[in-house]
Amino acid sequence: MEASGKTSISGDLLAWYDANARALPWRKLPGEGRQEPYRVWLSEVMLQQTTVAAVGPYYAKFLDRWPSVTDLAAADDAEVMAAWAGLGYYARARNLLACARAVAASGGRFPESEADLKALPGLGDYTAAAVAAIAFDQPAAVVDANVERVVSRLFAIADPLPGARKAIRARAREITPESRPGDFAQAMMDLGATVCTVRAPRCLLCPLRAGCRAGKQGDAERYPVKAPKKAKPQRKGHAFWIERDGAVWLVRRPGKGMLGGMRALPDDGWSARSDGSGKPPLAGDWHAAGSVRHGFTHFDLDLAVLAVEGENPPVGEGEWWPVERLDDAGLPTLFAKAARRVLA
Ligand code: SF4
Image (cartoon, rainbow, N blue to C red; front, side):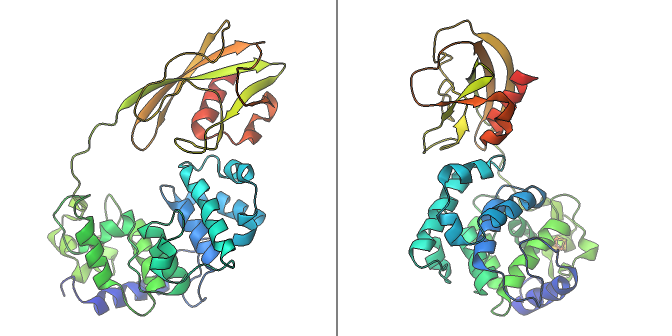
């Protein structure tokens, strides 16, 4: 049987899922009913660009502090940003709040259709489809990197990514069933995570092997085909450690842009497009305190840290933060690494 019949692919996959579904904190297993939209949405936003293992504690913490979307909507921005610290991609946390507030403003219920979900702040194609399918059992095609891999292998799609995304999405729509689309979406995710893995896919154990073109050709790892990668630009910047009486000067980054709204050490204005100026925010006897390297999605950053002691704070808003309580400041990973380097 070729990879075509919607019924056979979804039937085989759902039968496999019934026996092999992963128990995840945000998941209702087959037969347990639908998961609450708030939980589906929260977990899906957290899981973007992050691993299941990394998300677990954050998901538990958020649910504990903000058990419903209206609780989250009423939360203080700074508290949410601090609770998110370490998960990365901070625009997601700002969108999370914006979305919670939009849902709360319209009565506290998430809309059910994919199109209405997509109109909410921060919900792209993937998250809208995932919430529609998993929380509301709508036959939406949920395509993340795992599903992209499985579908490109099932149909041996030879065009390289990202150009092939349209064809992959169309195929995903074709095989999404009307019945149990939420379980189907989660089954595809599980298959991609545990069987149809990036390296060494386990085709012999795969419930879809009978209809899989790449599996039959024996060259599954070739898919998805990727266009050659461009080298990431390398940027240079500085962060400034200003310490006085056991406290360090922290600023709040502007709401928009890289690590927006997060607490941080002052820096020299580096960005994805340009190096920093290297200019400290105040005159003083600065000394080198190490450097850290950090990979962002579109560039890598070499951040040198300069330190000074006993000076008045620079002009502009900020706060003295006790060094011994720095773990509670909610610094994003880059600045937490820089702080650790100074204190080492
Ligand atoms: Fe992936 Fe192999 Fe299954 Fe095809 S047969 S879906 S390549 S694991």
